Length: 142
Image (cartoon, rainbow, N blue to C red; front, side):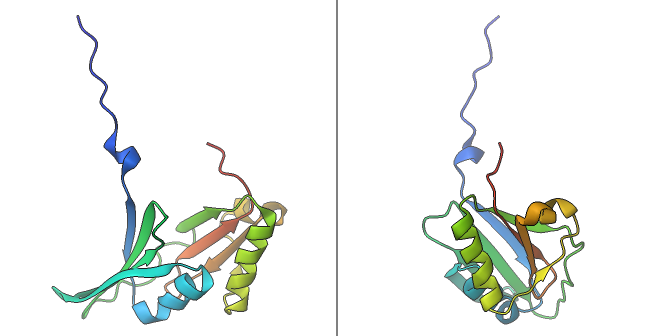
């Protein structure tokens, strides 16, 4: 009996889009652009009732997409533990990222999961729709 052929997993090479609706693209843009430093890489309007914006950077293997649909209110984040987590191992760079958010007027909020607040290594910020981003000073342990 021959062994099965193992094919490379194309998902491991894929560019990732994280997409979600928002109440207002204009309201969330400052959080992700001025605060987190993402660039607007693309946008669209009037596509079957949807408007959207993509945020990222050409060197990143992912980007964020935010959409609005005319006449639809997607509401806020379903929980306070819906997170995007950015691991920033260099303490100086982490402090710069936190300061950038704070200088843009975004307030650190208490994390729902105390893991992110332990040892003062995490800072959680909430966008205008209630979705949260954690800036964590540490390595991702694979």
